[in-house]
Image (cartoon, rainbow, N blue to C red):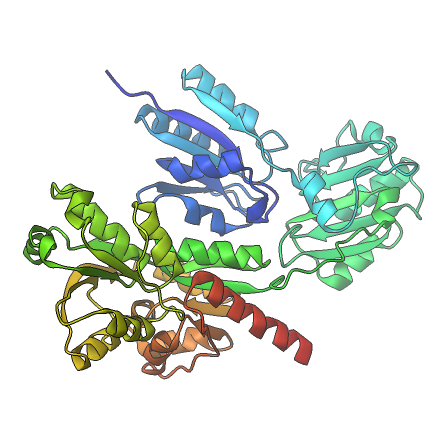
Length: 507
């Protein structure tokens, strides 16, 4: 029997990726295909699975890359393939998003669908600019009109007269190109020249610009400020209010490009976001498992011979237990051993698999892990170190000096296939920092051309998670501006935060 697909019309929100709903984000993370517009934040696309099909259809005023009828057909075709499809739209699907037209096409083709509402910029962009759409004794209502569907003959639509006569706050979406026509129309219908007005560009984003004035001078002020699309026009008494936030988060306004594996990268992005920063992936490393190779198979067969297992990363923990179960063993095979973890994140991943770490160094770095183990381990102990093929040799040096027996095996490799290079370099243009979470990430970044890598880092600060990563960066002729002394996602984000605020105080 043929599998039936489903289409979810998901509102991406007004621009700030943090304003998408939890339900919308969940649909993104599990979908098979995402059909998206010219989104204000490309970070939402980082949430989809690697194998998810990403299909861009444009839909920005003056630059449509696909006709609406073609988009309708595309959604039907993808669902007919049995795919779980997300139609991702800026704002809300039903607020000038043409979601109704897409639903009619899906209904006609008997394709199941669901609408996941989004935060509309008609409210959120105004709030971000400190303008309430309603306010007691000032405005008891608000009204929204699209501003880019005015007549080709440069005349206002027939219902504009009724719209202009409404009391309350008037909001025009996508109407910057028709600002003179809108202002003249409002004045013609009796609005006062002194009526407050505002124009908000890139609402809710770091690049947000707000121009305030009246119907008399708003056109000139917009021109002087160089305001461009996308922008929202607000007319009404509330446009004179400014309830902008007085609280600034520590990393507010800071844009950070993240490199690393998904496991660490997501933790770092979360930590940066908690401090108010805008983090985005510029280089995503993947894990290539090697537990199925002969060397690791032999290790699993001889687990009874080891007394300690040392993990130097959360990825190592996940890969080790994945291989254990996939090869037909269970947790009884390691019931006799003690575990050491390089840091809190690694220990937490170990705990997720049902084991507590017997040793965690005070400083989360490989050298301190090795020094601590030297004081805990006797000559009778046998240590297993399953980790990345590019792991730090500091651990080996300390154990060799102590005469301790160990077996260092390549459990996995960290690699980058080079996909998305053009997009990555484009994203680097607007960043304040580039964060490296490992020496492997540094090597991948400069893969292909060291000179090109150094060029794109010019004018940006570089943050490294520790000395080893900083040394790897220096080998490519670039000195780290920030080196975290606590080797965790939170430690790296806090190091960036300290440097960012020091720079603002000095200026």
